[in-house]
Image (cartoon, helix red, strand yellow):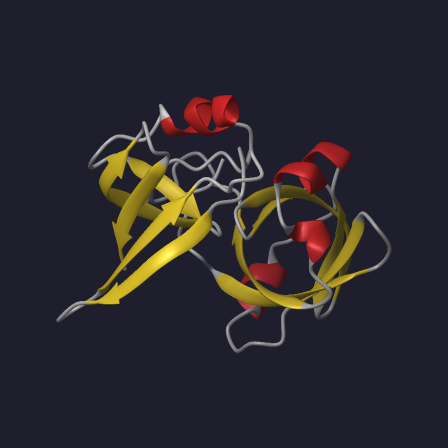
Length: 169
């Protein structure tokens, strides 16, 4: 379980079809790495992965076929990813409870700058069956929580019938 508060950014590179190397070249990433051990859970863009190897500058993890099917992890050649280690009992909860079990990949349909933020609207991708779109959308409620790329956000508006939601960033 996670909070949706990004602790570091890493660079993810595939090591085959289901295995990934995540390096942490950014300043401050040593804090995440210093406590990381084999078998730990790490949210990689919100996807819960298990650490298989740890090095001085990153870690290696493998994604299951189901994870690859429901996320965009397997479609990237090299990408920056948001990282968060798992929540521990007694830890400060700064965001929302985020499980790391991804239901699907949404599509950004609109991004509008406001005076102090951005309003971003997302929809279920057309590639999902209408039944699956509604299955996911029925859990969207105004002022509820959702994670986008592992970032905990509050739903500003939503329409379960048309399978879209809006957040402010």
